[in-house]
Image 1: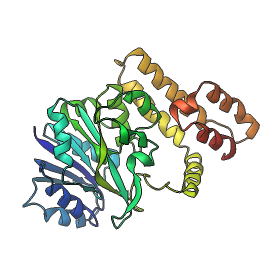
Image 2: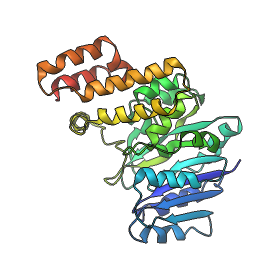
Image 3: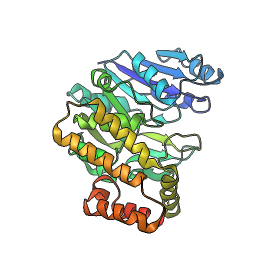
Image 4: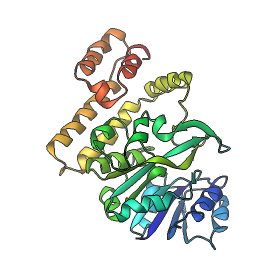
Length: 316
């Protein structure tokens, strides 16, 4: 089986060279690297061209910026190999990443994800992995192989980011195009593939997620208690619950062939996020909604339990 790596780049000149070097350093070097570049200048392209002799790079500079979702859609559509790895421009892969993934694809896996170590901008570990940053650290102890109970858990929160994922191209095509929802490509692919029980998990870190101010992902920003508090306030201010309504509604709409119990679970997830997005600022006005979500068990089923209850009672 052949391997495509897909990168949706934007102003990536500072880090993309290190990432491409880590791809070139794989025990099993990918067959192609597809890069679609939304940058307004040629600085990223200059860095990419340095690797033209050691990697099969297919580089495309967009005449005008497409935005994150459309840029990823273009890059994913251009992938031509059997297995497609999603890749961020500013991270690093450990040398054994592709060979360990392909072990499972060769055995019949449809989609695979792993964990990654979160570092600061200089690449120094901050003491937390991506699974742990999403309150999914229990997966570090999951046996390598098919992920059990993947759909109910994914309806709460998908544990991996795009840079930890790879999918067979035949599976990926089922889920494209990506919806035009901000910063959703990894969550959308994660939940959609989980709805069809596609995921195999490798419970170890096979790369580095570099945490810096320009990162689109929020992973690793909420390590301390103070950061957790700020994150809770921020999610209220930004109404991230409405974002979840859009995401899960998109999956419900796109895949009517899912079994009835899975579609019902999606509807419950949508209703829970919608209730939280509509909670009034007045304390006594929102108490009935909070009580309904407590009594239905939705805070535990779709969120962080008592932490979200505290968030809704005191942080609004």
